[in-house]
Length: 203
Image (cartoon, rainbow, N blue to C red; front, side):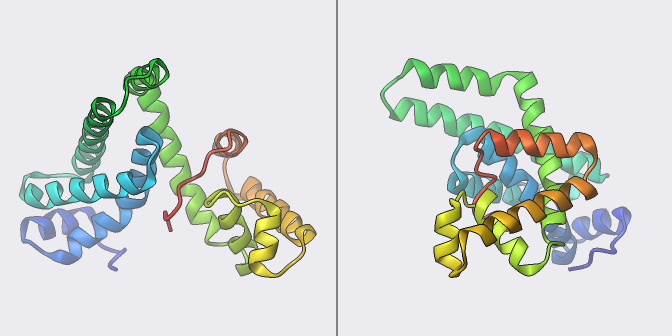
């Protein structure tokens, strides 16, 4: 993966149908868009399908973009629209419930959408920092906060004690607190305390 490509090289590469340039954009934005789509739809598998469709659209229109900012805006707006279409379709397919109707209205709210985008940007930073954790700590942290497993389940899965799981969790949180900005760490705590599954299959 050519992470040292400049913005101009990426844009020119897309215009020249270079797969390498497209892969660079895909690697950069796919994880955060999948997180974003999952937060909107509540369905990680559907979110993955949606974002894949969005990148197919990007490939078809690849020659039209002049900056990465334009590409990012296109990806977020298109992902948002696909999510709304999915929610409307699901609403038609299911028995109409007042609770779900209110949920759809809440998702459609612009301020709520901005929050989802902020969460997405924060989680991009968090995932990068999680990868820097020691192997065992990283594994436990992912099982806890990415897959939503309880301490006992993790202990059984890894054949370790629950106290080891708890200790490694604390180590992970302490490290993230040290390397993230105060604002980003507070957002992370809100997500964790809200019992959010931070997106299975993200990494």
